[in-house]
Image 1: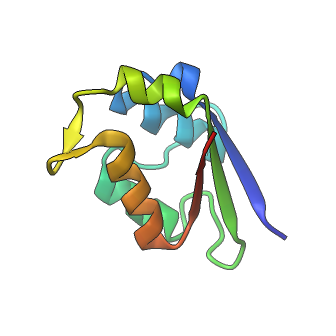
Image 2: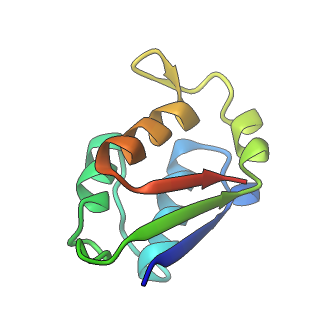
Length: 98
């Protein structure tokens, strides 16, 4: 069975907002799921609220709202949303931008 985690992009206007939102979506209020791209990659691979044997899909709803607010925020010369997508791709976890 696949677990679906939903993020509300209307609440994501900074990278810190993203990490807070995904932490709480995965692990409940105050939950941790990384505070930078490297930590996010570690969390996506399991052990921080996800089971490596249970497929996870993350739906980032209202992602265009987030993208507009995060415009200009880059990581390694790449826009933040694109950098996050690359981390998900590398970890083999589906990220759906809605």
